[in-house]
Image 1 (tube, rainbow, N blue to C red):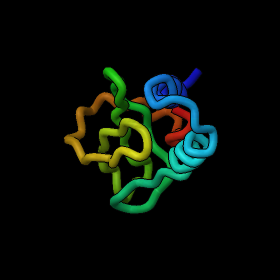
Image 2 (cartoon, rainbow, N blue to C red; image 1 turned 30 degrees about the vertical axis):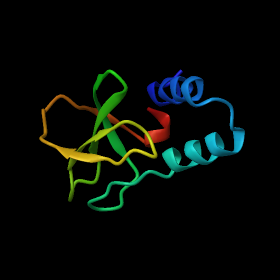
Image 3 (spheres, rainbow, N blue to C red; image 1 turned 90 degrees about the horizontal axis):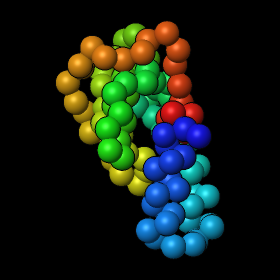
Length: 94
């Protein structure tokens, strides 16, 4: 199970059942884009608590973001240099 799916399960337990709202939330995660360039592919970075650090895989961008799943915003962070750059992911796959 991906980290993002684990986060969604935890939020479901707290918020109670609302299948339509959770389907919309999952869809927004799958469609998440880099706020700087609009790219949809990211490198996986350090995980902690209920968040993940990601780095935009667009070579012209490369911005790093703190992400805890929609509806939360992505917040720009400094590049820690600790990203797995061998494979790119969409945020819904992490």
